[in-house]
Amino acid sequence: MHEEKVDIRTPEYVSLKFQPAGLGSRAAAFLIDQGLLTVLNILIFVLMFYITVENDRIFSMLEIDSTLWGIALVAVFLLNWGYFFALEYFWGGKTVGKRLLGIRVMQENGHSVTLLSCFIRNLVRIIDMLPVSYFLGMIMIFLHSKHKRVGDLVAGTIVVHEKRVKRKRKESAIEKEIHRRGLKADNLSVEEWELKQLGAKEWNLVKTYSNRFLQLPRAQRDQLTKKLALIVYPKLHLEMEDKTYEELENTLLLLYLALREEWEFEW
Image (cartoon, rainbow, N blue to C red; front, top):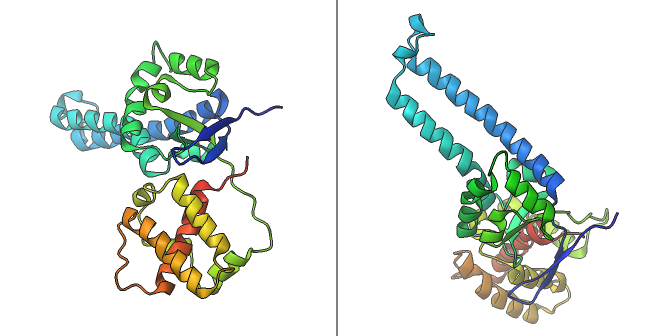
């Protein structure tokens, strides 16, 4: 079966190919998320019931504290709307359902979703839900060439399949060097939201740097290390002052490991 592809050219003139996520995978991801939310909603109401009802009159709704129930209703609303908004922004465009199905939300220009685009696409869910059970949203996803719902059109986002590169059994030279230095992606002292400041341009620079790392003479490598650090360090709010070249190299190689998980795909 022929798979649809969309060719995205980033503002940095980097061409990326993605497979848009269709109605089936998006619906399955949504059902997983909705199932999780349903369980959480039930737990909230069960908890509130036992908190606000006296033990000796557990079936008497007259004993319910209306203020606490009002707070609980607000909490449920924020949970159901904020779940998608918060996870998509802070978890690389993925909710629990999207992660399990291997799909993610991204900007149509190839960058990670922004706070504003996340807010808009989830606010417009109200329209996609019309007239009932996301009918309008499903029709839009089915008919649109890039499988977009109304929220995606307004926010400038797209949902794509995420296929990781299949690693060869034999480690590459740079992977051996990273392991020799005892570096792991978890050692990078950069928060997820800070990594979102780096786009396709920075990824290609870091990837090129890592691929050339072992081939360069020491003097050229130090020069390239400093140039790249001057580009990415400010975006990650990292300090270069008093750092040795080896420390700069280690951070850039760790950054390669972290960004590889985000940007390196097989299509």
